[in-house]
Amino acid sequence: MGEVITLDEARARRSDLRANQQPLVLTNGHFDLLHVGHLDYLEKARALGAALYVGVNDDAGTRRLKGVGRPLIPAHERARLLAALAPVTAVILFSEDTAEALITALQPEIYVKGGDYALADAVSPTRKALPEAAVVQHYGGQIVFIDYLPNHSTSDLIARVKALR
Image (cartoon, rainbow, N blue to C red; front, side):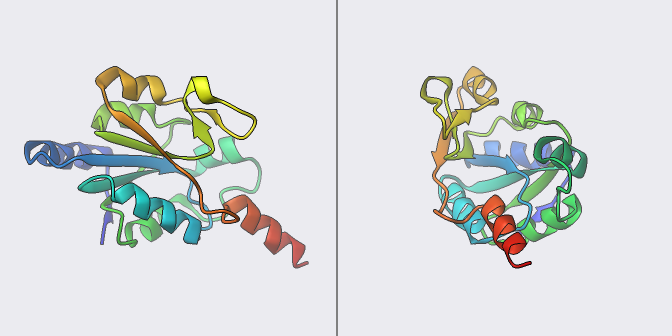
C-alpha cells in the first residue's frame, strides 16, 4: 500500500530509487470520483517502472480547472483513496495548474498522461496539448500516453448520476 507524502519526502525517496537504478513513473490528475477507469490507467502506468508516484491537484486547483462544484471529493480523501490502490507507491498533493514543478523536482524516467493529451504535433479535437511536455523533454524523460478505458470517465459518471434525478 502506498502513502500520501510531501514533495520533500518524494524527493528523498526519488534519490533512493535513482541510486538503485529503479525507474520512477509519475502521473497526475484530479482523480475525483475514483472509478475502474482510474484503476486501469494506474495499473498500466505502474507496469512501466519500479515505482508509481501520483500527483493530485489540490481542491483550489481542481476548482480552477474543473469549475464550480468540483471537486466532489476533498483532495486529502482523493489522495488517501489513491494511496490505498496496489499500483500506487506514493501520492503527492500539489497546488499548481500543471505538474511542471512536480516533474522538475522529481525528474521521473517516465511521465504518463491519459489519451486525451498529445504532443504538440499530434493535437486534435479529441487530444489537447500536453503542457508538461517541454519540461520532460528538457531532461530527457520519456512521455507515455495511456488510452482511457472506454465509457469510464468521471464526467460520464457525473452525467449518469445526474440523469437519475
